[in-house]
Length: 310
Image (cartoon, rainbow, N blue to C red; front, side, top):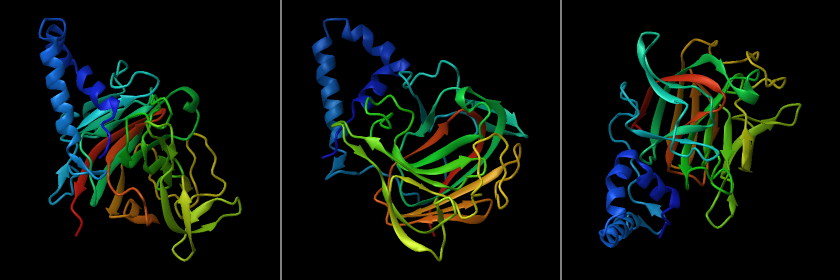
């Protein structure tokens, strides 16, 4: 059986509406009844997992519009360093009109992400994004940075051992100036303190800096954690705002880009603006949530859609 994480309960209880409803009960003589019911609820959730597999994973059979153009009702938010499910700085919001259409705005001020309520597998993800103009903190003069964590698993914040980190164990579609389309295999901790780094294979070659880049004619190599750069990443890449590589597929800042991730079992195909930029296979992660990062740069998402595989 799979464990129910303490953050699942915390998120349930800290929901503002639920919290207002239950506190009078907790403080009353009905406390024992409340605890009994909570245990039953947890038991029900617990039985939804059998032999370590989540039985509620969704495999799309028709298009799923995760962003409905109005609110974040298919998502919840998470921020690092103890903010958890609170968003006091309004990092995540929906703007009525950006280039004529509603979009999710991620300010980048605090690190974390907005995360799907559900877990998914075997899908064709389509995302349209564009960068804003605002940057924060240590990334104020660095390359605009974000990303989409696919098959995110475990408790929120498990990027750090104390579960206060911004990310979850996952396979990342990296979004960064000059490096959009890179794989990053994001490691995370279990509740027992063990750090697990995702494993995946790819056909790769090395540039003259020794970095691995996707090469369809390269040698097969297994990665445990780390990154696999997209095929055209400039070996002279610099972490500076406005960086452009010679082969960049990403459009200039202020224009909309189309990201696609075709996720079929243990394989990933990453596309950017219609071009295949990276591939991986034999991934040990094959299902999970999607986390859209806030990482120091303003970014807008106007389309987030899951389509069924052919």
